[in-house]
Image 1 (cartoon, one colour):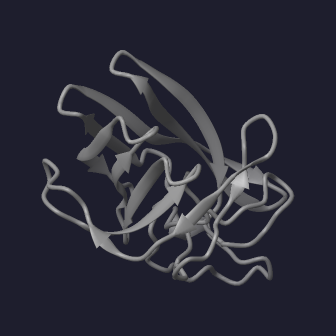
Image 2 (image 1 turned 120 degrees about the horizontal axis):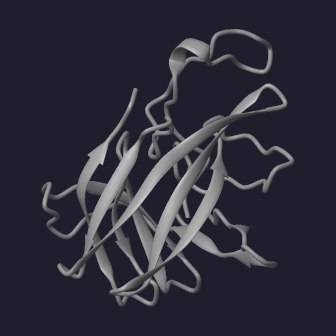
Length: 178
């Protein structure tokens, strides 16, 4: 669910040619310490956070820890490695969130065990009212339109519906380390 993505520590960022990296405002910020907390169905919370950064062949990749609710008392924890250069590399290659999403384009990514998660951008919309207000988001629907994430430019996911739309998880708090 997330990907191809956002601003990290600008002071150490460089392109493949060694030139300084020019940051772009993207849909999924990436910096160690970034944190998103959601209230789901107004009864329980889940959290996503960037927990580490690694050097992979001279490229910075970030570990995004996700909690995906499977019931009001249990979540599946997933770690995804992400980069913000939108290029394909030999680590689970996939662009999951585009800096300029294309209507009805697929942004599929490898499934945890085998196969792929089918993901499509459907157009821009607004979130349901969250504890922080209403946001304009780029929603991506996945798994046969049984789950979706609404990304707000420069902030990340503001609303998460799933799995099978059983849970509406609304942003309650977020911290971005620039």
